[in-house]
Amino acid sequence: MDPISTGLASGFGLADKDTLLAMTQKRRELAFGLKVLQQEAPHVPSHAVGQEYTAHFDFFAPGEPAFQHAQKTIGQRIGACLTWLKDDYGGDETAFPRINWKRRGKLGDSMLSLNVRTSDRLPDAMTLHMACL
Image (cartoon, rainbow, N blue to C red; front, side):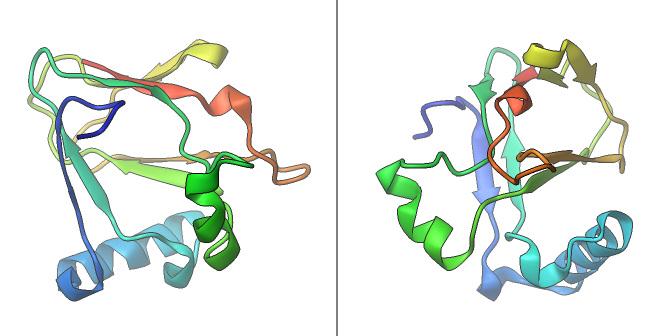
């Protein structure tokens, strides 16, 4: 159960890595400059009509005990890459309400959003986002 999402999700670990996942991560490296070793394994959410992904941040909240180990071992999550896997659906925009911006991609589109300020790499509260289904 996820408190911010009522949909389904699947994550991929090291044992799940195959050619397609490796190629996807390499394409992200080439497109955005984030080395494969800096990337987390892909996470694939899926939402049906009536389900939601409420407003949230993708950075590790400073001082939050649940994130202390991750911050010490892998560091802050500086960005998030969203790739659209289908385009035959209604709604499903990604919205950033604090900057009044929405995006609905097409099949194969990707979007990189930074989770931290470039000036000091501290979490950026303006990155609050959600799925509009």
